[in-house]
Image (tube, rainbow, N blue to C red):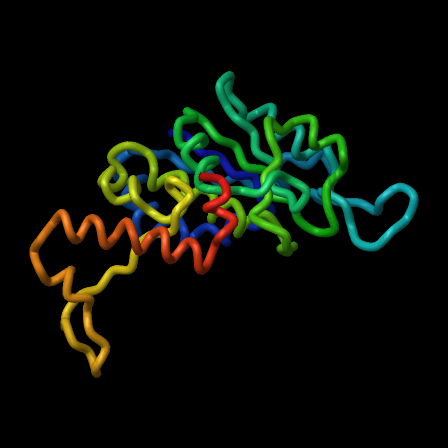
Amino acid sequence: MKIDVLTLFPEMFDGFLNTSIIKRAIDSKKVMINIHNFRDYSQDIHKKVDDYPFGGGEGMVLMPQPIFDAVNDIKEENTKVILLTPQGKTYNQKKAYELANEKSLLFICGHYEGFDERIRTLASEEISLGDFVLTGGEIASQAIIDSVVRLVPGVIKEDSHLKETFNDNLLDYPVYTRPADFRGLKVPGVLLSGHHKNIEKYRNEERIKRTKERRPDLLEKR
């Protein structure tokens, strides 16, 4: 998989690309991630990328020219272009699986007060992390990239994500490790029994119970 990111702050990705699973995926060539500063595409002598909005209003707005030229330069025939905006569709695990099947993704990270409306015409789709506003799309892009890359075949073991939270619209079951008794807080006896059928039954029941308590809205989708 090839992933490109358009941003004004490429330094925000330094740690993200050089640690943990993302770094291993890059090193093993399961994914290639390129960070582009779209200021480099500005035709302004001072590399300006924003301007005041027509009609007045607060803040500065990203101009179309640098982003149009960047996308046209980087985009390939099969590239899905994703615009990160609070006005997009709310991201979820189902969408993560969909994006993991793509060959090429290009994320546009907005900043400042917003972006020229014509930039929307470049996007295959618009995505939001949720009903809140960030100062820019960089953190949102990292969250989405992280959730997608781990689903790329060979990045992590498939069993590690098949029964995760949100798969089958259920939250994940509780897990424990040693010691079996920590300051009076004990591990459920069934997990110490070695009886795999009973353990599986317990875990399925706990998934339903936990979802009912914490996210009943998910059960309505089942």
